[in-house]
Image 1 (cartoon, helix red, strand yellow):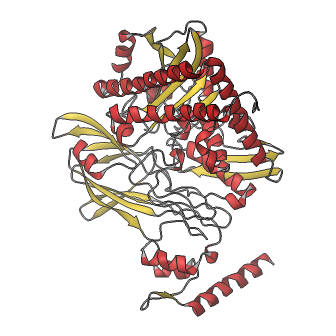
Image 2 (cartoon, rainbow, N blue to C red; image 1 turned 60 degrees about the vertical axis):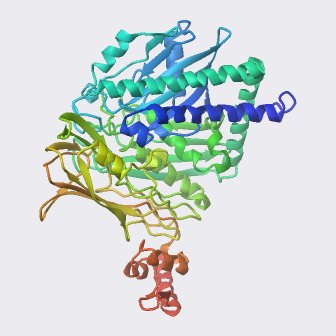
Image 3 (spheres, rainbow, N blue to C red; image 1 turned 120 degrees about the vertical axis):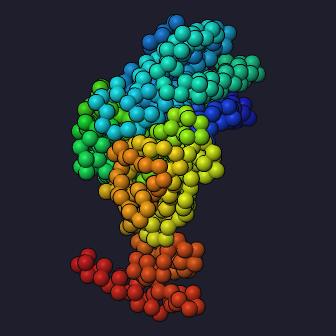
Length: 591
């Protein structure tokens, strides 16, 4: 480190400036994008890399979109070499020729120059409302190969020295179903890059290139030292975790497993996914860059939260991610990957977290409620226009962590809360669907000393024409988010259609037809618990019962807490007897 060569005020200013630039890029996109996924659900990311493709600032966003983008930036720098200039913008969404995630997540890269020197590269990435392919929007199961999933764009210049390559953009937009909306979102993502360019130039004007570069080196070295110091406090050893998704959408009802062996040796961490299942015929496969992102994100959760916004290339130096080619965690072309952010991507994160919870039980984290998304494509009778609709509203809450209950209403572990729930009113305005019921459900969270966030009941009525529903962005009919250190797994979920008095089960990773007037419903499990449920504070259990997170019957059966129904107080004697009997049975089982 360089304490004698750069003063702390300058270092702090430069460091926080990069973080602010990332947040400002997100704000620009928020205020100017138009599609529901980006503008309302915030399914986007932004970050900054240097001219050596090192990660400088990645303040917030879905884990799969940007934590591995040093690979993309390095690929772009190698491909274009000296043919990068001020004003260039490059687009890329190809998982195989560009190290991206899945096809709907389009990335926009801008090389940033100062006095003719390439100094940084800015990235914005957003989930487009359509990317072509066999079904609108994405996440549809059983595509023949990745070409069926949509338009694949290798790193391609769309601005060359500040001049738009309109012919290239029109070629791209001609291959999506809503070109006008996608065009607006693309310009929003590119506008944010221009803002970042302006801010970096201003920073360099103030401090000069040598000082900013020196601050960057210090930023990287300090985060590396910070992470190494924390790893060195963990006992050496190999710790295991695993997680499964319901199936791959092609071979139905056959679980797909991700297995992680986390080895800590001194101040280094190896996350090895070699024992995971082989590459699948269906759409749940992860490419290596996506697996890397989730694994690194999972490990970051165990480091000091005071530094959570400041992770950079230095934080990643002590971490090695292994995923053999041809596995479900490192799929090879032309494997389909459309469902990977939700299915297998989430499992990579869960398996990592489970392994590290075994290594650091005092920081244990349970899995979040499984994703319960969908894509609906049809005709809006109010306008006669085609539409595609997706939402995150049905997801259960987050998993518990050691010392804290799960967060109610958090959405999707793969996004770590950066992707948010939508607005009932917004959905009803934009799409021909009417909300019928939307509320929490008692006893739909993983029990524990600290319980998971609650599950949801969500029902909407189709007030438009008959539609197709792709349930690819959902999981949890057959598999559960794992609890930790004795906490229960999050509950199973279910989905159904209601037509009059008839209730018809529907499943994840399928194509479902919903007729006009029918109701699409979901009961979603919440997050997993942490710690033995019989060790939960009885007064907290009483509070849960009074708030209707837990029923009195569940409190007695699972938490071993007896509650007097008339006085709504804990029956201390009955609770003591219940917990004594549980402890005695546990001792007997151990013997």
